[in-house]
Image (cartoon, rainbow, N blue to C red):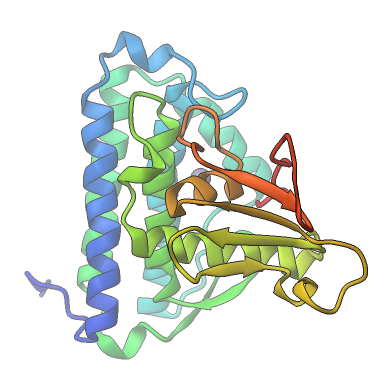
Length: 259
Ligand code: ZN
């Protein structure tokens, strides 16, 4: 029988589930503020209308739910058969009538929430595989969804900004992005500082060991997170500055590719 409350008892995991559900509620609010006609408008993502964003976020919930089901049953069910299938699904979803598109978002979000709710403590460490081929514990699905809903709510381009995203989510996002750069070696000589805090990300070793001057990008947490995620102009990249060594740069460099 299905539980009415989350079966997970770990307080950290419960907090993460809360962030994911808050993000989902935030995305739902921004989506509900859009008229059907406005869904045809452009998003912050190049080449994607708002319809593409909604379709992607809906199918993403289904894909993540498949991972949670995998963790629960031990039966391997990948997020998507392939990247091509995923992309095709988004293009198809973007053509759905507005009511169907909205239902896709709502139903998939509820379904995922129920899959999480019913996953017992013993199964959260079970390993599943992401579309990038990473093997992760089922608990990682919560973060995977959290960053999707918060960032894509901004991508809808109807007023949400990175400043609306909780600080804990922004910090983890920066760790994620700079970690991905590091794994690819694209962060060489690049340091990211969050002003007003002692948070430093990126190629922190460059501060003393590297020959030549590192580039340091600094600004408020929400702004540097938006910049690092490749979204600055309309998503709120205000207050970011860049220096090379001791010299101020007239332009903030484009962040390395993230995904
Ligand atoms: Zn996405």
